[in-house]
Length: 520
Length: 80
Image 1 (cartoon, rainbow over the protein chains, first blue to last red):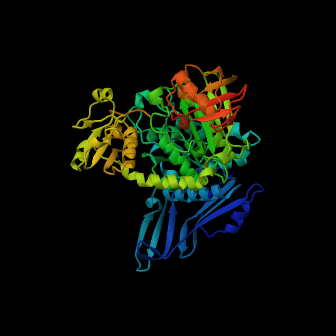
Image 2: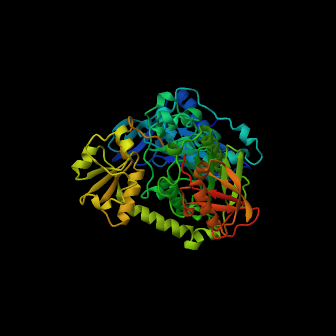
Image 3: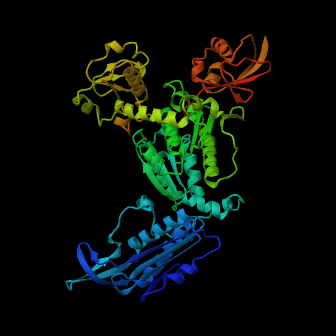
């Protein structure tokens, strides 16, 4: 079917609308572009569109086809006028019909933005003062949701049309399910061992928008389990590498990148932009922060974590009465209590298994596939090849402390107050110039392996509370490899009333990201 | 004395050197049982940092230990 046409005379939208009616369509969205009476402060009397018709037809057709593939809509058509137009006349008409409204809106937006940006059409404006000028329609380029990855898109190559037949063949998925995926917005926090399979499967499945949060750069020690990357990528920001790989895997997916970890000040706002969040970091603080934001914004959250040969998986649906992470472990464990990959080691495919399970849970929620009605913590032991599903009783969790929402609100408020604890500096000299006394809280063997480039007192985090009285009175900045131990120590000291104590956000790794990165 | 089946996850598995064991104990409650195990295996985590489940259901630490129970100790883990 032809999806795009040029018209040198006025046309009837009602007829175009009828042609898009389809029994499977539950939503119809239209956009009309009209000639207005001014442009950039000058009064306009009318205008004249001139198109490079052959190219415009090919490119227009391609744009509408892209929108159909990208958003899984049922039908779409676009007409662009050429020739003389008066004020108020219809210049562009776009109609989109689809199973659901969201993809109709988004496809419509996509088509008009791409038309404005890519079509070889010029307009000659006739001004009231008798003057005229030619304006290229593509001059108003600005970044839209689908254009974040413009740099990675190979626009000169043939347009890729994804083939989702292997999953749409599933009775519970079908074309309607595919449309749900195309309209879905999923945030993946952490592009590491768990995040790599999550991103790969969700991009492959055709999830419309993927947000990626990760502040780390790729380290050689990541490669055994982080399958999106290769040896040439070491030292690069993971969010950028992941975005590039996703663009190569499925160019129809829109990627939004966040190169800084989320914090208490923005986490709820970011969550509100997504339908679902998958937490894939190795950071307990992130897990609890995400849990609280998910509960407060009502955004479903899929949590997983791994330890050596094992993993845990929990889906927080964030529905009233459903349990959350704090229903199991009410307080965030102190560093060292919860084992991490850096400290305890992990077999690469363990991350792959748990990440693939997270991706499965995400697709189940997005597609509304059958899921157990109760809520559970799933324990997976890959040494034994066993798994155990432990139902969570919400009545025994946060319900005893005011309910998940109240607990989350209190925790997020506290986290906001604590934000003042973590300070970011470009280098150590800057911190010293700002009047901070540096205290290195790493263990002695770590310090000798990687000494600080400036003078700092050594006071290991394991002893710092006992030696609190020896701390300087002025501004104190605790430093460790990643900011975790120093952050925890600073918070403990503040609880003892020492509000002069701060922690270097991101630790030494944040100072020399390419060279001294400590892998996550 | 009663006999129970114990399963260890994550740090506990590592410190115990096995995924589980059968144990005959006189412990009255799960908390007492865990205290006994801390001595036996040198577990560094306190009970408050853990979840415990009996016969595939999360449980209270005050619960009595029953003959033939399968008891699972679960620490929070952070790897990703």
